[in-house]
Length: 175
Image 1 (cartoon, one colour):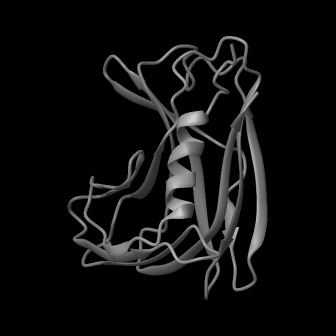
Image 2 (cartoon, rainbow, N blue to C red):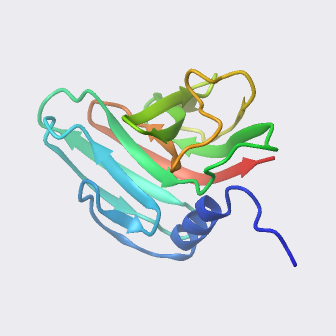
């Protein structure tokens, strides 16, 4: 019997996106493929388009009518229990016409909402796509990373102003 690897749900969602040629308007809270959705600040009046062309995971063009407090791309992780795991991480390639920063976060559901544990490094998106690799140690972060949670997701906090961003690749891992 083979055991399902940690983060398999996230990888399946990303594989669906990678295999798709989906494109269209971004609808807040609606999944673009199962397990992947945008969650913007509802007061910002976000509008945008996405596409998933061959060779890129996702291309985004987003505008906000008003200053946004947040704008996130959420990917379901499928890891409730961190027992036996030492790290949760991601490898990504981003590009953008102008320098942008993306803040990755591991969000865990709690009885009263959620808890965010931010990765140590922000992702730099520049005109020349760059590789980004980061991992969170799961031990000793009890304030921001509970050992068990009813759900977890990776949130990529996107810029809160208008932007264009290309996500060439994203791999999520846990070991």
